Every structure is written in C-alpha cells, then in structure tokens.
Length: 89
Image (cartoon, rainbow, N blue to C red):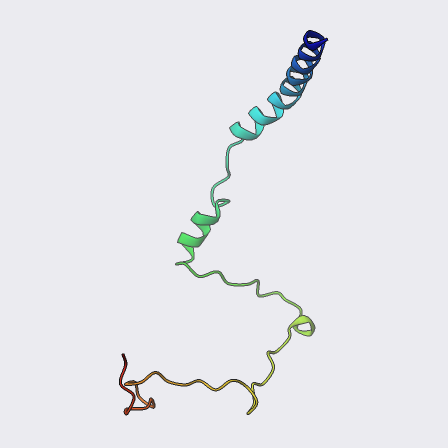
C-alpha cells in the first residue's frame, strides 16, 4: 500500500511541475521594458512620487481644519517656544 501512495504522489508532483514549468520559464525570461522598474522611475523623478494631475476636482477631499480641539504641539525643552526651565534627565 505505501508504494502505491508514493507512486501516486510522484505522478502528481511530475504533473504539476510539467504544467507550471513553461509558464515559469516565460515569466522569468520576459524582458522588462525601459522605465517599467519602479526604482528607475523613482531615480528619474529625483525621489519624488507625484500623483497624476488629471484627477477629477470633485473627487478631491480637503483635510479637515484642525481647529482648537486638535492635539496641541508641545515644543521640546530648549527649542524656541519650549520651556527653558525643564532640565532633561
């Protein structure tokens, strides 16, 4: 009984390998067109990723106004606007 299982398992492995082999070889050998690499595009743009400029203005959403209820920004001690009396440990 174990030998029948081994033969069946080996046949399944061979069948799967033969079916996936050509597709894997084509994908591996497909030449990349120039500029399709994201790293190349990032190098050409100077490290800045800009969104498309043809976005529908009706789809743009402005961020909410923070107003007085937002979390305040507390400058660290020793910086301009920070508490000069605080001594760091």
